[in-house]
Image (cartoon, rainbow, N blue to C red; front, side, top):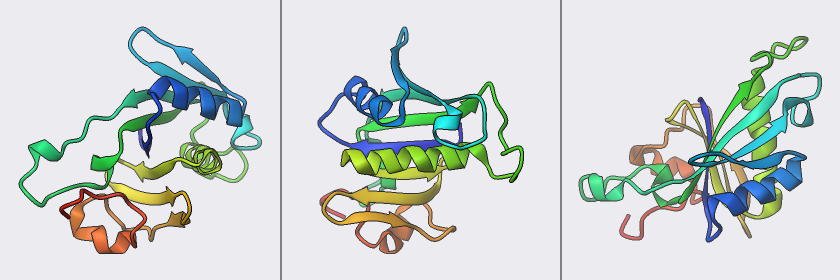
Length: 164
């Protein structure tokens, strides 16, 4: 898993999966331990077969395990989507575009349409985009991290702990 979308919401992971499944023409499937959001990849990335999605989980904050004043961008978000491309190519057959990233961007667009407060993270540490309802969506520069030392680069689009 390289792509993650974190949401700050009062909705359960099951409700989130259902809302997003309707928006992208996918399904919210109940697994033994988690709800999964799954869709045909071609619904998100034209010309690519396969299935895209992953579990939609509660995301517990790690703040209580960090030194005082230290935080990471996902700490104030309570639902996580762990996403990947299955049963299909990882690179677009004609353009060579990274399918997982392109599909995650398309899914993030659905998150924006649904009005969720959200961030999109790649490789567990690169902050790609954020959405704050009422303010809009924002795309970060390629080298922006989830770590607090980059908080000024987040331009107020990431929800941070109150004391930060």
